[in-house]
Length: 331
Image 1 (tube, one colour):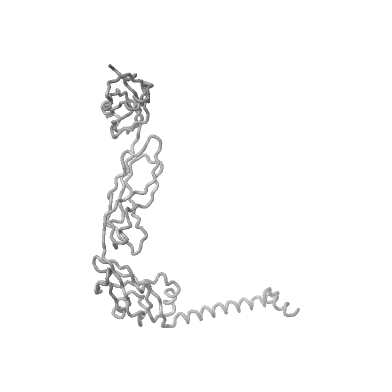
Image 2 (cartoon, helix red, strand yellow):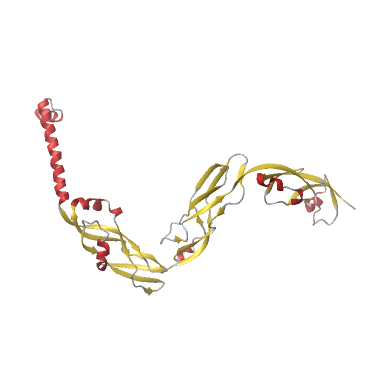
């Protein structure tokens, strides 16, 4: 046992330079031998089955493929080992297209059924294989397919945007979409569950100028898949610099008041946020201000809240001074 241990250590850690050189040559020769053996094996021609995923094209007009019993077919091929290597060890990338333009359908309850003979599609399949592949046969011989009629409906589009602005800038108007609705195509049971289509999410930070951006539409994950009338839209985001402006407005009589009254003061000051481009348009005549007469009559303390009942769309009232006024009924 002692000698065996000594020999083992000697192999692992050879002491003499001559022995180390011999061991190195041996290892190199072994690697080269394995490499040559591999090349010889890979250069030979083999017949082997390879699995391929099926993608169907040219489905019948106004019909949607809802079920296929066989989504994977097996191709028996002849090729050199080198060409076969990638196809055998990376099957997820193996795809074959089959043309359904000539398929015949028949009604079966609420669905339509048809079948495709792979033996009649050998030339079509062979044309999609690498040039050094020889197609021997296909399994299964028959692919059974189920279809449903295609329906469509229009649904609104919702832009999924997150916006922020630098100081004094903000959204000038509502975001304008190139398509506020799209048509959704699919089988009836699926599109009946879809009520809107969202865009991809985009975040725009520290905005200070208007932007026109493209947004992809997000398809709901459903089976069978749906299609959309458009795949993307554009969104127009108008950004403007805003400022604050004060404007004095007279308090007018409440139309619901059954008795005349007078307020003290008879004018109030509104602080508005307005876009710079609209600043010159501000005018007291664009605002109507009154008091909450019904609440004031009930309170008995001669104080009433000021209410803005009319204002221009381009201005936003952010403060009223004073917010309450005294009132007096007139005889």
